[in-house]
Image (cartoon, rainbow, N blue to C red; front, top):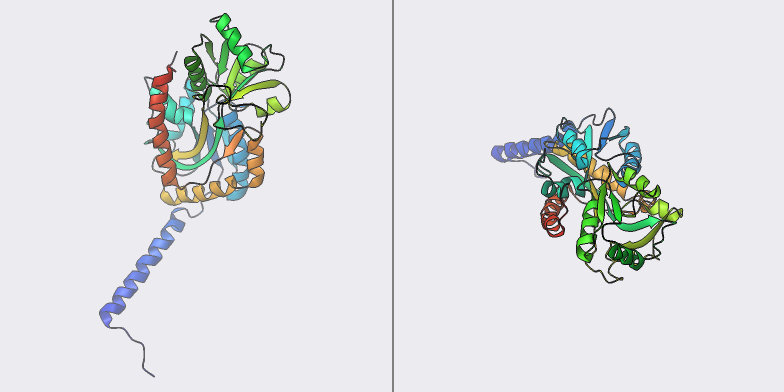
Length: 331
């Protein structure tokens, strides 16, 4: 029986190939060896109690179980989300400081604010897209407005008398409110608060007339708030009885917010890929999807890090025209 043998050059080339392949395959494991071996901080650049904070805490809880280390939510509100975002961009790119990047901080603010302390895409490493939310026009349960038409009639009869709350300059509520007032030709006062939580509390306390918020489902379900319209392409599964603006004759009113997980620029690719895999798996959980749905959030379809980067860049360009068109300017 003939022996299997190689000529020396072929044998040596094959050995070199095998060694290189082993090095290539082991590099990601070595680069993230032991990661994570301590708690991970997830910076939320908005105040506690708002929609971003609520979604982040649900995701952090499940991600903690998945990676075997605590994922600690740290609220760093202020300057329309810029304070917390800037802190994340300046952190060490080691995977232990992550950011809940949002459409407000990473797509709207750059066109809204003259002094932007960071580059919304270049100074971060996109990891995973997690949720999207639609804005809902809500009033207090005891509000005299039983419908959108009733609110519009009063707004037109009394220019400047009504006001709406937002989570701050550049928030999704601010942009939605600007779209609403510009498209419908209304004179309504914008009242910015330091995050979605304080804005929601102001509405519940009767300090403002209404809000176009993304995190009010629980208050609507409990009867404390009343939903008049949703700024979505179609009715929301969690609020099937509430019409869309399009159904009510205002097809241009489709707006909301998205949230993504990102790290500082320079996050090692193996760590990025590891986190992307873990976060996408967590977001696929039916239980987490249901709990996010109670907040009005929809879990995003899984994306690779490169796809998240493309998405964030596209959103940055899209909001350039949105901000210019609807006049949402810093005050």
